Amino acid sequence: MTILVTGGAGYIGSHTCVELLENGYDVVVADNLCNSKREALERVKRITGQNLCFYETDVRDEAKMDEIFQKHNVECVIHFAGLKAVGESVAKPLAYYDNNLNTTLTLCRVMQKHGVKRFVFSSSATVYSAGNPMPLTESSSTGGCSNPYGWTKYMCEQILRDAAAAASAATASEGWSVLLLRYFNPIGAHESGLIGEDPLGIPNNLLPYIAQTAVGRRDKLPVYGNDYNTPDGTGVRDYLHVVDLAKGHVAAVKRAVQSPCVEAINLGTGEGVSVLQMIEAFKRVSGAAIPYEIKDRRPGDLAVCWAEPSKAVQWLGWRAQKTLDDMCADTWRWQKQNPNGYPL
Ligand code: NAD
Ligand code: UFG
View 1 (cartoon, rainbow, N blue to C red):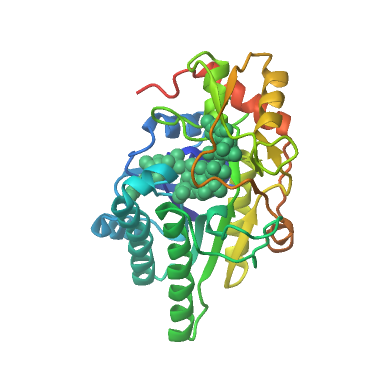
View 2: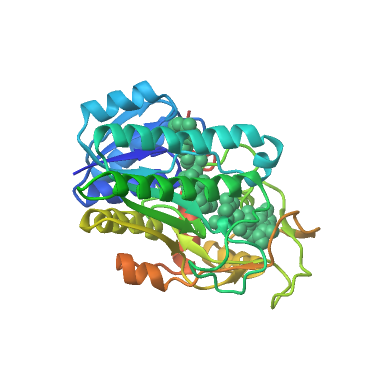
């Protein structure tokens, strides 16, 4: 079975390509490399000993996407391609709405044209409204997003629900399968140390910043606030291993093939970890020093965010397996082997 993976050269996409290839799927990647390098896909091939088909293209290029669907018998789309930096989305909202909405709309149109009915979407815990009690379930309230990035995910979920409803109303044959996967905080790297997260410039996210501090690329980790209403005052998140997350996508493809459905599903561990707990775990596992300093709270940050993960068990037969130590050890291996990320 052939899976189209948009954004497959990126952090989560490359790990998902590995799991798909190892599960016997044929993989076609469409990525414009705006936030990734071709080398990631070379390494996917090295890890798996298998080939994949790569198109360097913008997913908004409808003619090119049409050509890809003509050439390959795509049976399911996993849509990772998108812009994802929360702060940047506040400064450049139009670029975010254009990229994230128009990639999704283009895919829906091309899928409709070619009769492809299975869509696995990279959504995010950021679609949940602030003020929900923890843990977040799929029926916690959504919307009221604090930044344009969050709104793009919220809007894409709605676009996909509406497209699926229209498709099933219009046809007597099988309806669409749409799985809206709401990721919590993916971290870690493949255990080979060959692929991992390679952010451009100063990292926005906690783990790449910790890893770059541990390896000596950054002087000090800023800890954004120690006066939250949490056990040690620092922010608490639900971190999950990117390989677990990648396996969640294989489970989602299998579920999409079984029968039509439209479901939002949390992918998280259900465990909250604070910034200081993460620093301690990384120090213990790596043996490296991680100097840090307490800074003001980062605007828009929540105190706590973690998942109620049981719907994924019920719907996908998936649960996160890897521990916090695995996440730290694998991040560290990737960072040590590739202190400056992928070569150009
Ligand atoms: P990433 O930036 O590493 O990967 C995204 C990939 O999409 C990149 O390779 C980029 O070059 C490509 N891309 C972007 N716009 C494109 C376009 N118009 N056409 C073709 N390719 C395009 O990000 P990631 O961390 O792997 O995230 C993948 C998806 O998961 C994103 O949609 C992101 O919003 C979502 N997500 C990520 C996180 C996280 O913490 N990493 C959390 C929740 C949701
Ligand atoms: N933090 C620091 N220092 C840093 C970076 C982060 O203290 O240098 C803290 C933050 O304040 C927060 C925690 O570490 O308490 C996690 O922050 P991240 O930036 O790593 O992750 P977020 O939870 O803010 O956001 C991430 C993605 C979003 C996604 C969200 C939910 O960046 O795209 O998870 O999935 F929407």
